[in-house]
Image (cartoon, rainbow, N blue to C red):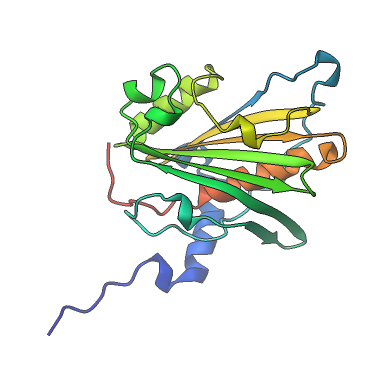
Length: 222
């Protein structure tokens, strides 16, 4: 007779969702490290406008299965709803890498022992907004946080699929966050049609995905 299964986060979805909100509010510095940086626009005259105040942190769409490897096939279209806030984006590409070498431009990821990476591409508002996310896993939360700090000051350190981004844009911005053993980079570009929606879109896309890592690898230590 087998041992009874121990309950996990999936057995208490309501509790998990509540905890995510509480942790995101009470411990913003404990689980995540976030930095915004502007992209280099193709024309200085079309630089992005100053971002508006960020909305309240959303809870994640779903919790990732602890200790499961990240895989691009595990991510589909992004359909987000939190109260009256809704966003939709079509997944237009996904790549899973056995190492971080394909996205490591100058050795920053290798120096911090990046293990493997996933890259995702999205399009929204009929192609007027594009987004690329790079998810990188590390052996420890300490290594992930150190990498996020380094990437904040090295905008070209991570190679993302620029062929999936708009060639001409007026809003271009990237955000870097470490959550546990993972580093998430979200790059968003939008033309004038979607410019007014870009800041909130990027905030919710990035935060929703970042929060999904809160309950991964709960036994991982530094």
